Image 1 (cartoon, rainbow, N blue to C red):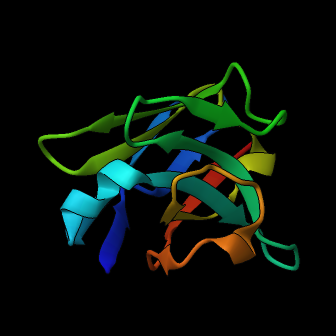
Image 2: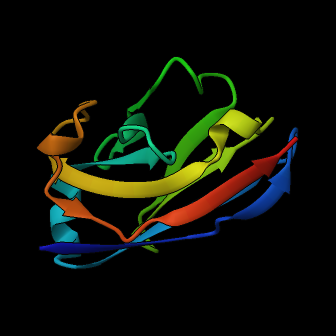
Length: 125
């Protein structure tokens, strides 16, 4: 089992940038067979896919709403996945979660087995 811990959230203004981290611990060797994704959930809304990365190979996938603004990378040595968020908008305000699953990146939250506790991102206008 892999444990995930997010960090880096905060309060920023529209147009600012923020970088979130997702640190993995536990059976980290299994990360090489996994995809790690970022989801977000705003109050009263369903959890939505933001983007993800295949640990092995580094292929990424993004939701249309964040393409060109957000980017995902990983640091193998630190067992950490990053979500770089640029040109933030008030509608990006949400709790951001990272999650992992085997072998693929999919957009369905229910297909991910391990989740972090989430980190709040608030973007003021």
